[in-house]
Image 1 (cartoon, one colour):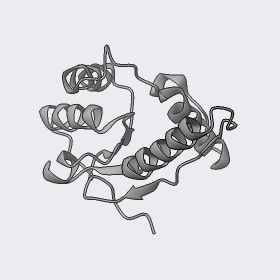
Image 2 (cartoon, helix red, strand yellow):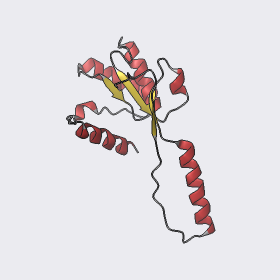
Image 3 (spheres, rainbow, N blue to C red):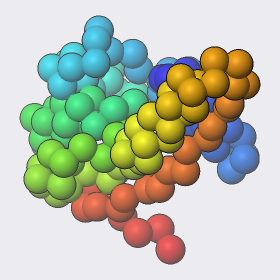
Image 4 (cartoon, rainbow, N blue to C red):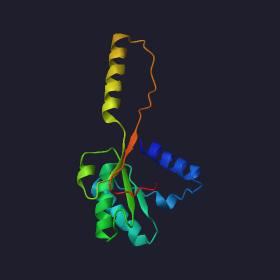
Length: 145
């Protein structure tokens, strides 16, 4: 799943005529907030300039928000931040985390429908489904319009 998110990041950069610089892809030890907090601390300490974070999950975004605050970097004034999953907690953490909503409920409903179809007809063909997603803009990003 995260490879698709990285691919989207690379595609967006290419479409905007921006370089794809692997120094800006920062792995975490795991998908925890603490691992993300540690990784962001390391990036800040390295001196690599950045003005945005796109976290692979909202849990990682939560750790990034904490690390940025630790480093006295203001979200979104100094660093804009977005996550992925649109977890409820993303609304509650100041300033509110902008997040990609992958439509978990719609995906689950469609999966159950496909499962019922396959159970009713074991020879039913496989189906590739692309779920619609949308961006939920909150206070961690500035309006670029």
